[in-house]
Length: 388
Image (cartoon, rainbow, N blue to C red; front, side, top):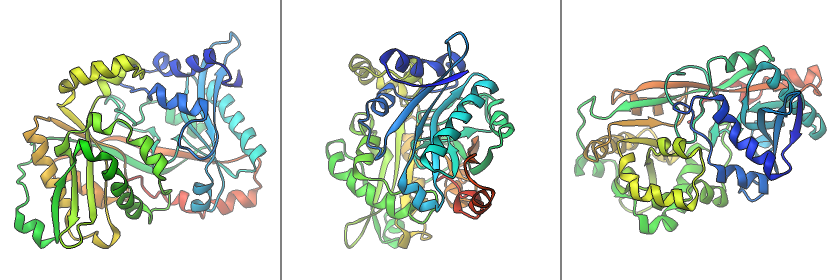
């Protein structure tokens, strides 16, 4: 086995194609090729370089892949320096061992204390290895892998951290009524919906609430405007306006909470193998009505000084009503940390159930001393603070 940096278009194509050779096409949902290409070309919003690597066997076939990257913001937040890796797939334990050895070497060269991943490119973006729910398909920006994969990490000395779950809610399984005007007024808020024509001004407002809401969590790194723009690229194209719910303060008009849900286009991404060319985007535009039967809750947040007042519950009730009226049958959610009981209740109260278990993995880098390895266990990353 040998590990090579992706340095030409042929190797890039092999990097992109590997998951399609390893995982069932009806379960795994590939990363968008455009996202991977932005890493390869250095045009992504990530503030530090992202290196793509592939693992080749003796015959020259690609049997593993990963990104190799860092983030100073995360290092500062954790108080321990991390060699990050993501978009990680491998065909066998031998391929994984070769990859992990390369990550160790990269960590040693960069003076990093631990390996942490898979994160693409940060824990609060797309992250994790699934540890349960292997017979349930993934969805856009979620992990999917075979049942043997967690054992490979753990046999290689990695430990679980930031364990979480995705959730699935069958719309209408619990009778739900929309909040009344009096209920919104009692909470000091008014309800507003998304507007495709105003996403350019709405996104910065959501970013403020998002960063404020999650700043208190140890794993979270503040999202920059450039990262938010990249993450919401095409939002106006996909947006079902009744699934972007915004709570504004009755007096100031400032945004204090929101829920963002998008139609689940995962089957289309699977069909195109993540290659959303201009022609494919036109096809999606013409057929997007087919993908309004299931939806994905991307993110929700409440300003810290408004948390615990039932605002998110009001928005969640309205969301369930809107989903039912829109003909949606199922809602999936991105990962919610096991310790984040408040967010989990927003799904369990409507009959939701855990879909996938997930975890990140960490391992002290081989270059660190036993003292630094021991001290790193006292940092927030090892307290299983959940992904929200």
